[in-house]
Image 1 (cartoon, rainbow, N blue to C red):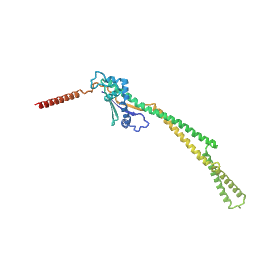
Image 2 (cartoon, rainbow, N blue to C red):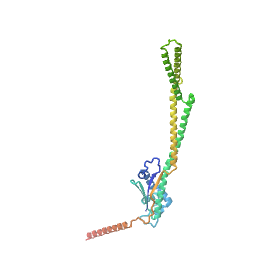
Image 3 (cartoon, helix red, strand yellow):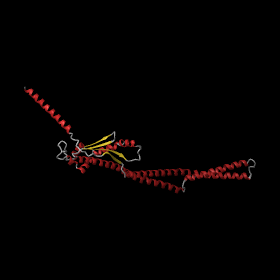
Image 4 (cartoon, rainbow, N blue to C red):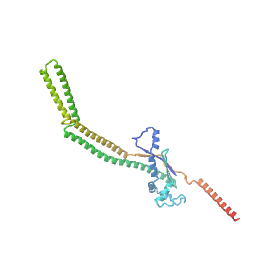
Length: 328
C-alpha cells in the first residue's frame, strides 16, 4: 500500500487577507474545501482510472495469474468491472478538520503501488490547475468581447460631445454661461455705483443738471446691456439649456470611458491569471514506497480461519450428537 497526503491551495494573493504564517496555514488548509472535494471526486472518477490504465496497465497488473483467487481481478473485461475493482483498491479520503486529502493505492508489488499514487498526485495537480486556467481563459474571452463593445460605446459618446460642440459653435457651454454671468454681475456692480453717485449728486444739483443727465443715460445703457446679456443666457441662445444638455453628454462620455478603463484592467488581470498557476497542489507526504505488504493481515486471517474452523467443527459435532440421540 502506497500513501500520500496532499492539499489544494489557491495561489491568488491579491485577495488574501492574513499575512501571518499561522493564519495562512489555517486558511490554506481548511478554506478551500470545495477544491478538495472536487479533487477527490476526480481521483475516484472513471477518467482517472482510464489514465492509470493507459499509463500503467492496471488491468493487467490486478489480474495476474499468480495472485490469490480472493484478491485477483477475475472479471475485468469491461470498464465497469475494472472501475468497481478500482474503487476497492483505491482510497481517497478527505479530512475536513485538517483539510488534507489522503490517497491510498493497493497493488501487488511496491513499485506499482508507488507508481499509481504518484500518477494520481501528478495528474490531480494538473487537473486542478487546468480547470482553473480554462475558467480564467473563458473569462478573458468574455472580457475581450466586453472591451470591444465598451470601447465602441466610449468612442460614440465622445463623438456625440464633439458633434454637439461643433453644432452649437461652443467649446464649452458651461464656460460661456459662466462668462455671461460674470459680465452681468460686473454690469450690475457698475449700475449700483452709478446709482449711488446719482443719489449723492442729486442732493446739491438740480435734476436737469448735465452731470445728472449723463449718469442717468449711463444707467439706462447698463440696464439695456444687462437685459441683452440675460436674454442671451436664458432667452434666444438658451445657454442654460445648452449647459444642461452638454453636461449630460459629458457625464455619459465619462461613464462610458470609466467602464472601458475598468474592462481593460479586468482583461489584463484575467490574461495574467490565465497564464499562471492558479491552483497549486502541495504534497505534504510524498507517495510512499512500501517495503513490506500490509494486506492481507496474516495473523488476523489465520486467527479468523482457526476460529471459523473450530466453530464449524463444534457445530458438526453438535449435529452428530443430536442425530445419535434421536437414533437411541
